[in-house]
Image (cartoon, rainbow, N blue to C red; front, side, top):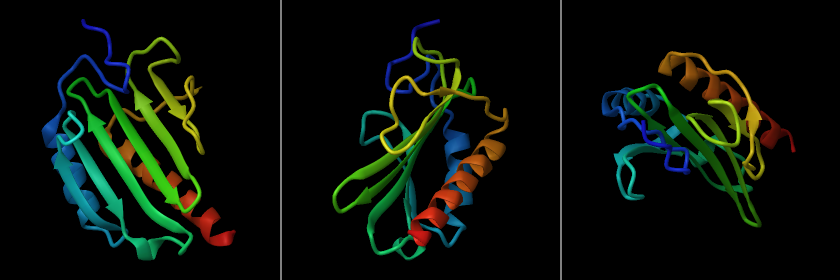
Length: 144
């Protein structure tokens, strides 16, 4: 098996049907203004833009980028753009030299190495976990 690409990649191909499922699921929520599968970055991925009304005015933009592979590796990158800085974090499952296969790169800078962790096996459960953590983050933003 080939080594990962070093960008949260996996030696397996992207699982487009799972990206399509996640796109449909996320577009059905009021929290998402746009979700599209693209290859603009040179990688097939789901790009999600959260609705600005869901966030305090201090947040210029909030996005989620998902790559899901046929071997159930994944990288899910959340980003908030503030006027003076960004806040990033990533949930990952892929082979790498810096952490266990399942790991989290915490906010605000998503440093490498991240924190070893454990994720559910089903993509629906992973999405729920990520969205719950984003909900917690949004609650903190509104309380500031």
